[in-house]
Image (cartoon, rainbow, N blue to C red; front, side, top):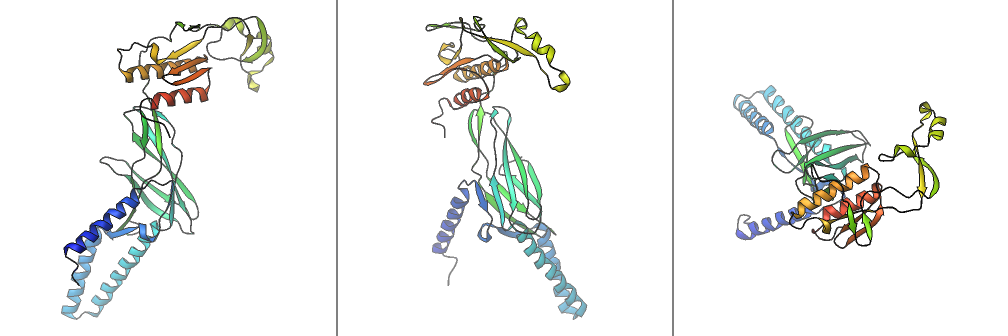
Length: 334
């Protein structure tokens, strides 16, 4: 049967394309079964094979019994190494972990878990991301245990950043063979705009019917005592409560809290920025203002096109604002 004709070449190409499509599908978890692992001799493995061939030819030529024994013993070791190299990667479970959000210019960290579902340890498993100059990670997995790797990828723009395609490989134990597999983790990192350096101060003025700026809360009614926050006036420190707290017992500063009266509202609105500024610069300035308002514990309202948040503060409010800034104009977020 002719296996070199155009029909066979076309079938081989289609099979290779199907394999690439299957391996390119992003998955949050992957089991390395038999059909997902490839194995070939390494450079030293090919050299070792050539040496075995020379030993075999010499043994046949000179009829050396010990030469036959040495040749087939070395060949047996190579075959055992091939099986052990394949088993070092086979039946390994790969799982995608967490990916925290970062700012543009920082490195995104993708968390990957290697889990051994069997009862044998795995050694010297290399995890490489496709791309020139990509760092290499190596890990061992204990029998029945798991190992967590963090793959760092540089960022240069805001939005979603997908995890790169990974190549998992091993040459353990002798290095005569290399077994490898591919994985496209279903991981995406959210990249916030880079905060503008030397940004102007937080906005003051008016917006609609409310005053815009950084004002003090009303002082009509005493509402209680709360922990001190950066930006609180020193005149509001609750000295009686502070005197009762022992710093050795975890005591901290306390502030009197009032409710009622007039209060200015801080509004961060993209439309209020000069329109002649580049969009990315305006988003970077809004990012800096969000971080500054959070660091000073100032409640702030947020306006970004159709996205609007009422005045608030805290990690959840900041994360929602930064997410909106990261995805602005890039389509609907997932």
